[in-house]
Image (cartoon, rainbow, N blue to C red):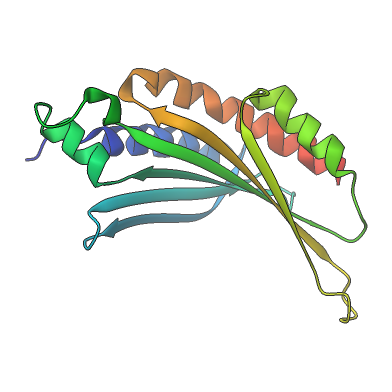
Length: 171
């Protein structure tokens, strides 16, 4: 048996909370990836969810690299300030008409706080008959997440559901 890392513990907490909500029918898990990069000794876990009867999807991504792992396993060699993971979210919206992107950013800032980095990219195919527009919104938690914030990860799923509801109404 091995001693799980902070990454493993956070991943299990996120999975548990989201799969419980999926089983209850509150959300639908649409994708899940658990990747290990042996060349760089990094880990990445992501899970994509949506509300039932909604096309807005969020992908929650947890990342840990060699510095994070070394800080945890070799505490004498690196500062404890590197032990943990990074968290990002991407929201995927499909719509047929232009939307008010400022109101989308306001929704995210109201829910997640003004300090989060938010970027939007819009993908159109103007020469094709299907004029659907795909918007990708990236929300970056520009700080290390540690095991001390495990309870925050659980609470975060409430914010995810609220965000999905509000984005669904906005498009």
